[in-house]
Length: 125
Length: 350
Image (tube, rainbow over all chains, first blue to last red; front, side):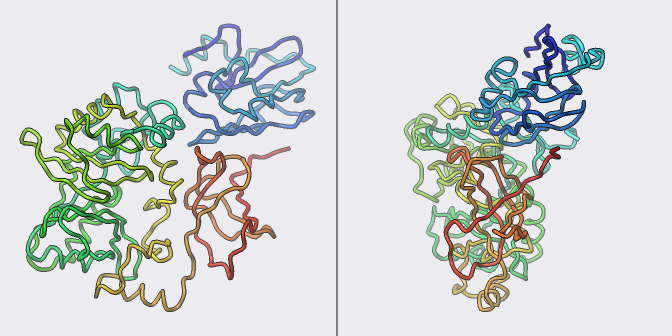
């Protein structure tokens, strides 16, 4: 199972990439494997102000629907419409082309609230 | 939980293949080996093999076997010659569906019934309680392994597996032995494709399953079985069928012979037919791509009134849109595209 060292994770099987004041969010390799074929993605609206833990997107596979939560406080500044058009991208490239949304934050989030790769690997094993 | 689930004789193969397992009707069953969509495609375009060892097999024999079964089941068994089979229903006295099953006439007075896993005990108890005449009635479900090979290439797979042997005709059954082991092969399935169901002694199940895989069938789980059957509008007992629903309401009157004479539930069905059906199972197809529709989703009319709830629902892999089944009042007249709206569980949106 691929768990990139440089990313942060949540216990809901999302990954977070922090660059400047932007957090890019997607679901982990483990999550896409558990869900299997992703057939539908519902994205939040750009401009939406979100609080950490808010359910703001949905990823659905043939058998199950999974909510995607905002891992930090912020504002939705970009959504990946490619995965809306072709949800299977999430299965093929969960950490790169399969990102779901980007949040802009004003206040630097407390990274201690997120798991590092080692802790996330412990969680899924 | 998983400790309480029963394991099929094919389990060792599922484990080797890394299948994802789920509990289904008390059995630990493979839901998928890899991608459900790929397994679906394998069956539509090639061949796929499913473990169906969880299903039940009853054997009925004796001079009164035919007349007894014909009084318990809805289809007319007198139409079956030796080696032929058909789909039929076991009803309660109110015409409600206890189970839907396949009945095969192996020989004049020898029958095989293939019943749903979740209904084995109930079917058996019901049939036993209504036993009449000189019949031998056995539940052999525990001793039998089963697999279904489905898809346009099923006949090739079978020929390779069995050294050139050919399948029985559609809905037929072949009863023979391989190295002293009894094999029953039925030309049926639950996917809408050509194919067969293959029953052997449980000890031989894994061998035959491996043989089907090495002869060209892809392993397929319950996930694909569900998407495949629903694309054909084949009902699933417990979801689309229940003791509160009759075969007429389920739109399956074709498998009910009201003219054949008395049978369990017949009076109730005759009354239903003369009074008109309260509701009927209809197939729904979404006009546009959208989220998968799931069982329990609300079906609305154009005005937004709830008119039904889905008994089954999926995103059809073949069509790319949501499809489902739901009971609803008969329409006064047919209106194409009359604006069904399916609303699944909505997530809170701000």
